[in-house]
Amino acid sequence: MAAKLENIFKVLSEPNRLRILKCLEDSEKCVCMIYKKLDLPQNLISHHLAVMRKHKVLNYRREGKSIYYSVNQETFKVLNKFVKRLDKYQCWIE
Image (cartoon, rainbow, N blue to C red):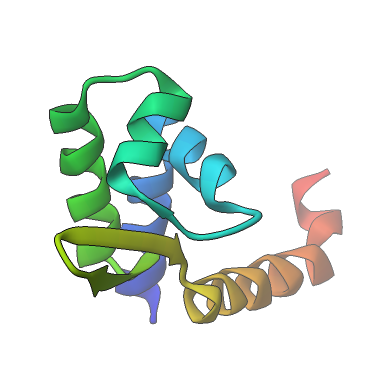
């Protein structure tokens, strides 16, 4: 699980990937909707989506020629569990 968490944090350390997550927080979207909303080149968005998909940060589904992306809730449950464990040891950090 540690390696997976490390990868999740690496993926989320890129500002445009955080913007993509924010864009997807309310509903799934196709690539064309994401790049229009974020005003970034489609090839850059596609690259980030591929990385996020590889590390299971995002889910995807095909509908015809379009691919729709959504946030992978299972990955964020793991991340949330980790953060809650860290919160127990907050006194160590302060």
